[in-house]
Length: 303
Image (tube, rainbow, N blue to C red; front, top):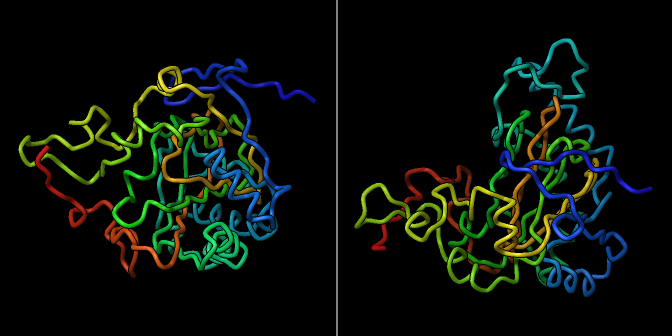
């Protein structure tokens, strides 16, 4: 059956639904266990979409725990079932790493045997993960601007993978992840934007970040206009109607963002990162208390 697309926006901009501008992620669940094929598809697409890779019941249980936490904080509409994560009107929330850090059951999913075996196979040697977990608790509203992860975590190795895990069904209306088709192969983007660090500022230009001096956004985004960016870079925006148990993993130079959350639900998802255990780590994201993008992470450059 053909999917009837709702009106889609990202960062407040309409997403063109025509076939030359929009499409769906390639489903690679048929290749699970064949690491040579998975590595080839990662090279071709810059991502692997693996529906049902994680145990759905385990993910659903963690979702229920998170929803109870949000309800206890008064963030959910009290007149609706807690498990639906319906936002209380007027709630503004997007980022809650503290929830992930406090949840042993969540970490057992995203850093458990199935996930680590996947990355061991992709890297062809033992893998390791960052200690910091990014937890997205996204209220109705605008999505994430298009960016590549390398500018946020490129001080160690660039041979990193992100895992994006939805903790709940995330159809298009709820604002799931979008990736820009073929963007991981854009050499000019790698050689300009891809060499920057969001925590670097220009010592010779007060108040100016290295990102801004190079023509990008201080936030680390490539641009704030997803539709215009697609027109400039080419490719299509790709997404899916994500479900509990799905996994989307991708490399550091793939441009991605998210659709706006046009529903009344809070969107729950995590981002986690994996690399070869033998490679150098970005010091911002490891240790008992990672420094993240705090003051300790800042670097001055002549730019």
